[in-house]
Length: 195
Image (tube, rainbow, N blue to C red; front, top):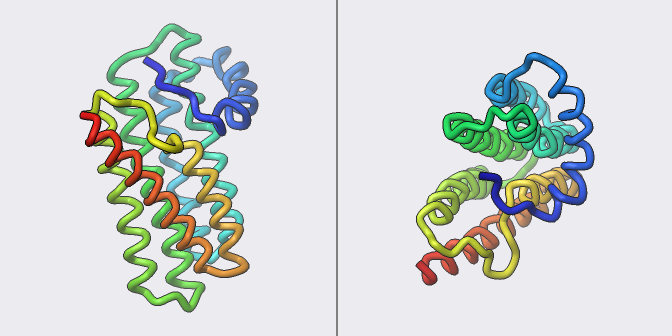
C-alpha cells in the first residue's frame, strides 16, 4: 500500500536508505521495531533545538526523512507488511514531524530575538496544518496535488534548508514555515473543492 513517491525520496533519500535496508533485511529486526526505534530521535532533536544548533537540527531532520522509508521497505522485502505496521509508521511520522518543528521553534525562542508570538504562531500553525492536511488527504478522493506535492520528504528538506538559513536570519526559517503552510493550504483547499 505504498503511496506515491516524492521527488526528494526518489532522487535522494532512497539512494541512501536502500543501502541501509540491504543490511537490515539480513538481521532479526522487525519492521515495527525499526518504526518505534525512530522515536529515539526526539531526544537529540530537542537537545539540539534547546542548544541552538540550527544546522545540526536540520541535518538530523533530513536524516530522519532518509530513515523514514527503511521500516516499510524492510517490511516489503521480508513479506511482513501489515495494516497495524502502517498505522504505527503514520503515528511515529506525525510525532517526529511535530518534534522537528518544535525543536526548531525552541531554537528560535531561546537563541534569537524574534518575537515570541511570531515563533509560537509559526510552530503551532505548522504542526496544526500538518494534521489537517493529513486528514484532508485521507478523506478526499483527489490524491493528486494542486501545484506542488506536499510530501513529507520534501517538507523535511525545506525544514533543513530553513534551519541553515536561520543562521543568516531567523526570519528566513519563519518564511520557510510560511511556505510549507501555504503549500499545505493550497493542496488542502484543492482537495476539499474536488471532494
